[in-house]
Image (cartoon, rainbow, N blue to C red; front, side, top):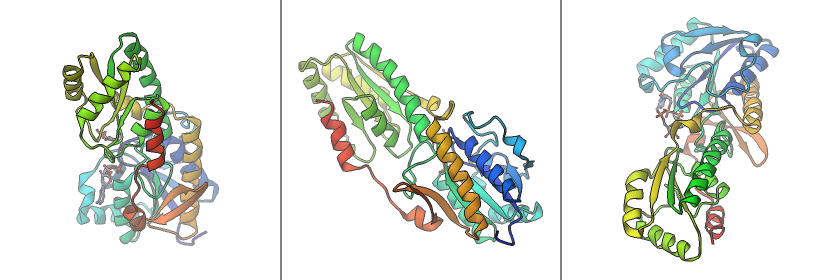
Length: 324
Ligand code: ADP
Ligand code: F6P
């Protein structure tokens, strides 16, 4: 055990994601098992600045692994992008005897963790976001649940769309990334998948595709549109006007962030939470946990933030092939 680490804290930051509770539980119980004291910081960096900090015992995290959301609460705290507030945060950590923080969140949250590390507080990030948009890892907590929630909702829309022989545009979350859209597009058998990374803003191409599909005997035309492209309602109006086919838009919205986490989210969140504690005890700081090529590993936060990831060209091509 690294000599200097006696107390660690855990916080969740940015958008919540199903499985964050499993990660909190794993952080708390692993740290307690390893002989540390554990504190929970409520509502992300806001809670740190407001000293909204609680002691955590093993029983505080009982019965939460199956629950969506985050029991610690989360927030977006713009103040924390400023050095004076980061310094205040580091001072508050010292005041409460917090030697290290496990930050469960996305890219933005790691910037906060990086700032604290520079100011002498050990930090490790755990990837918690439904968007799967963190380049250093093939898995982020919440993605699997969100995709399954969206897929089930889209199946339902597809039923009614087929009955009415309509075109449906369904907008899924993902911020600037198209992973939820790609996965739903393949899992739901969508005719078109619009990804921010790939979309050429050529609506005529979609219109031609709808007309062709109709000629081939397809009774519905399902378009999965990523939030990063957006404008599904106006797109539906234009498509209906151009094709004469009734077209409806459905924006799935926040339902994708809630609900009981899948086994996959609970499992990966549990291992990643524990891993974060264990690497901190090995003396590592300013790191982020990832899962790549079948293994859990960790990366320097700056390197992780510099990494890029895009949509796999082969998978995107096959998504199109499968709609013939
Ligand atoms: P996510 O962590 O899901 O990417 P955000 O981008 O909203 O979500 O970031 C979450 C929080 O992380 C922000 O509200 C802020 O408190 C903190 N944060 C974001 N960017 C920075 C930054 N450049 N420096 C310090 N803290 C940051
Ligand atoms: O990052 C998760 C996410 O749900 C994105 O998919 C979406 O763009 C964003 O958060 C919405 O954020 P907010 O909760 O601030 O509206």
